Image (tube, protein in one colour):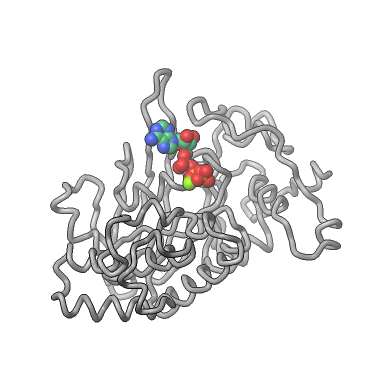
Length: 335
Ligand SMILES: Nc1ncnc2c1ncn2[C@@H]1O[C@H](COP(=O)(O)OP(=O)(O)OP(=O)(O)O)[C@@H](O)[C@H]1O
Ligand SMILES: [Mg+2]
């Protein structure tokens, strides 16, 4: 606690930028993202492929170095910290990757893999680590005898459970999960997602949940941030975002998601986004989305909209009024 009624967020990202040098300028993969996650809060980060979601996640866990802005973890600005000074903070934030087979050392046993963070942070004696691994295996629903196997002897779903156990070994304040189920068989995706949801509720860690899966994010996230070409265009409590998307891009994104009921699917107004995501090497002028927005005006083509706060929501669109009234892109471009 920093005051009487303020709680320190587990993550504060301020005006984050990650520009990659390129022969003809810079790839603006992340271009001014601000995001806050409170203790125990799950924030979903969604957006098309290439919008910069993983780059945000990598900068948060310091696998990548921001070129601008700040990353504050549990009250400590980690942006310029040396690896040595960063070390104690590494306990606080862990990443679960998309593909567990590439993130688990094939030469180590499952027990060694899960115990490694405890060892690195000097948090447990050998005997304690042994007990803790048994406990963690049980928590992620894996049989104790798997402890002596190597990653390649496990299924994809089991491997992802191992990486979740490893990430939780040191009881982090924040978990960054980047598409944690998309590399898995569809049949096991739901069980891994349920496990993540159960553990999150039980342990209360904050979570940045990066995904393409809108059903998953609706189920798991308290709040959702929508990214488009390196920027957040809308951010709102999950319930509000799904019930009433304000930004034309959010409307398009949600309308493109399949719904289980075929009749509802048929009756829905869908927006089909034409063209690909523009290149972050040469982003459009004004609002980045104007080249694909069915509602774009001259102002949208020239003036970049600020991310404005409207009640519990933030939205960056010239067409959304101060009282929150927003045009419906589905009316303008239905198929
Ligand atoms: N190391 C790099 N060098 C140059 N460009 C990069 C690098 N890493 C990412 N990019 C570019 O930055 C942009 C954002 O990439 P990023 O992987 O963050 O997107 P994403 O939203 O996670 O996409 P996906 O949904 O496909 O995982 C892309 O245009 C990508 O090509
Ligand atoms: Mg990604």
